[in-house]
Image (cartoon, rainbow, N blue to C red):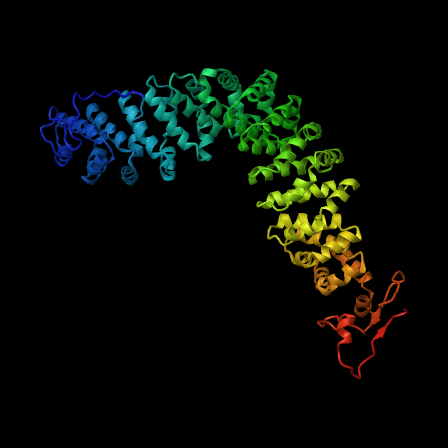
Length: 607
């Protein structure tokens, strides 16, 4: 951006003033001259201070220490326009310094600066007043003051200034102000969209960029997106994307359009004009990773709406997402995988993405990038949930081995989703056998010990799914998995507790596992759960019943009776009714006790 001030013929040392303007050569003396009653002296002193401050932060700090700002502040309301203009120039140039900004806030200069933005004021005053406000607007309390003191209206008006510096400073200040969401509605009501769209046609890239960044922030609000569409803003944004000479603006343009994709009304508008097809075509041929990544992220956000998913599917968005999985950028692949997860909510998309995308996602499970691994396995979870066909595709793509390896991933999300995919695959017998043969029950012991509730829940659910055959239960028992499973019964998380109860119920299907579960304290915990109306569930009650039915000595000792379906076999023993708080002893433990005159223990041994 160009500067309008006179160029100095020579560059004197930075701590010396131009002798042509002021005889004095010391900053302290020039600052004292700011108290002069003569307008000409005041104007020249301000001009000298501007040039002195322009030479660097060291000089700005020197003037700050000399109290120059306090004197200059009084001159902001001076009746002489030249004095006022030169004083504003000094404020504008000095406000980039942190210490200066702090003092400006203490002096409460915002109101005085806003008053300089009146239409009748000199364009130079507009330039430096907006520059000063732009430097200060990054700080929250100043933002509040600017808005409360009526700064938005003149700033928006100045977006139409003939001066590019004024435009640049004004839009930069507005961009900082709208970072606070409550200011977005305010600028919308002041009709900011038309002047912002005009700035997109500026010959200065920095102005175009700031306009786009401001549009990206304010278009997060639905009402703004509607106004953007009504003002032909979407067409203008698409035209920027089609113009290769404006490639440096494509990322920001796409960010604005990404917000518009989240709105059904705006998306339908883009679709009707053929803009959506144009947008997707542009994205398919783009090789810029940031553009590809941001496009996938925009699709992810938009795809949370069912109607938008339908529109995106009609426009073959799956083709774009699948192509993004083939890029060389891990960040793009992560974003594409997340978009696939979101689009899976549409059954037609799920079918298309499953057939073509699953082999690629399976390959990504072997990546060294943990974030990519998590995104890929999460996509596989969404693709295989309630989809036997996609589950078969995972098995055909030799996905079971990498899924088993993902159980040792560093990220909890990756582990939880790997368990979920394996559980989805377990519904098909061939896959189930293949997973079992790879030691799934032993592999689940580590996730059962996790401190992450999502991992705990998925692991317990998987135990319930795979624990239906005796060999799997034996493997879990031998691998030490029953202890951590029982600990999950104590979880405060309802889903974890319910799945753990379900897993215990399944594991209690054979006597050796049921006896071990009882020995580890499962019965006591389940009884405690079932006494609570808040904590008990249908699985906790069923688990308790199953444990007792497969451990008849314990059941008889606790209940004092057996049901008609309970068949006594060799090894049954009756040691009397268990007293509350006392441990139920195994036959081996009882045999080691010394003889007493107490009740005899009855043991069935037909052999």
